[in-house]
Image (cartoon, rainbow, N blue to C red):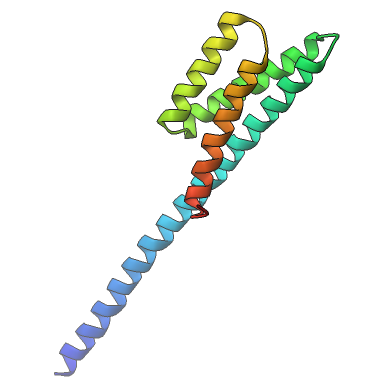
Length: 130
């Protein structure tokens, strides 16, 4: 009888350990995903602010254009790694538009705002803030 009692205690401890480990792992993965998504969102906002500065810049300096191109590449990289399907499609259309038109205008800014909205809503959903 005592052996049965000891076996039951060991089983409860082992099952508890496995369940706790599983939930801790899920928590860590979700936490890392949110960190990556926030980093991606910050990069998108940075690109939008650089685009706004370039649109309002009357000199249209090449250094600002170079900074914007580098920041846009960074955003594209992060969206390709961490973005969902809608964000990937929108990023592809942003890149296509930027390469085709070779001008940086309000349409590109609107597309970036849409990308910001998608990323922000996804982060809010992960935090259950809806």
